[in-house]
Structure formats: C-alpha cells, structure tokens
Amino acid sequence: MSNKLKFRIGNGYDIHRLVEGRELIIGGVKLQHPDNLGLDGHSDADVLIHSIMDALLGALSLGDIGIYFPPSDQKWKNVDSLLLLSKVIELIRKQGWEVNNIDSVIVAERPKIKPHVQLMKKYISDVLQIDDSFIGIKATTNEKIGAEGREEGISCHSVVLLEKKE
Image (cartoon, rainbow, N blue to C red):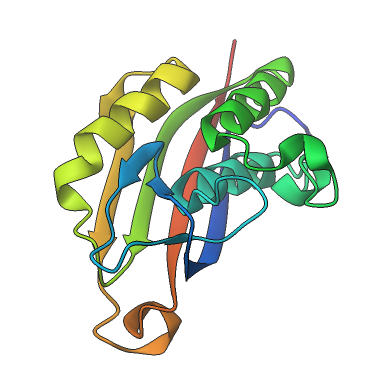
C-alpha cells in the first residue's frame, strides 16, 4: 500500500460544560455569557480550538489532544488553547503536512458567536500561519434540544483538510 497520499482529512469534536466562575473563551476570544458562565475544563476549555486540534491530529492518525496534553498533567492547567494549537501544528508540519482548510461549527444557544468570528479567525490564522480565508467558522443553536439547547454546555465540530508539502 502506498503512503504517497496528497491529502488527508480529519474531524474533531469537543464539548464542555457551562459553569459559574470560569471565563468563556472560544477561538481565543473572551466572550461574555449573559448568565456569566464559562466553560469548565483542565485548560481554558476552548471548544473551537480543541475540536480543530483533534481534527488535525486525527487526519494523520496521531491520536487526540488528551495524549499530548493530558488533564492529569498540571503543566496544562488553565493553559491558553492557542498555545496548544501552536504545538499541534508544529507536530503536523514535522510530518510534512500543511493545512489546506478548516471548517468548524460551534453549537451554543448563547452568547451570539457571529460578532466574534472574524477575531477568532484572526487568532487561529496567526497561530497556524495561514490566511484566514482558509478558516470557516459558523455557529448554530440546538433549538433548545440536548445539552447545548438546555445551555448546559457548548460544543464544536471541526473538519480539516491537510495537504502534503512537496
């Protein structure tokens, strides 16, 4: 079997519970939840960045972010997920791959995500060193259904396409 694939695709998913006493950070942007809730997690619990990292790792069969940044390691406690993303893209590039594009959808009833999408894209494109036009970020509600609909948490789905550098 040939390992000379030119493209690899990966998908990622993340969800975190909304709680009091935490900042709400999505795509590296600090948002204000109407009820002053934030996402609970070992790091900053940034569901967008976490789903992108899992998609990047999955595209190359490199496992998931828990392997590289385990919640049992205090070194990663409250860490900025954009820093973690920089470490993941370094690993991807060492394997000879580059991001072709990313498409993500954030699932949250509140707060409104759309006003913050451009800044999220800027932060992500700066870390990945790619043009922000290669990053798609959308948001939707869950129509009051499920954990996201009941505002118990926020989730994100991401797909990435990697291209082998020549």
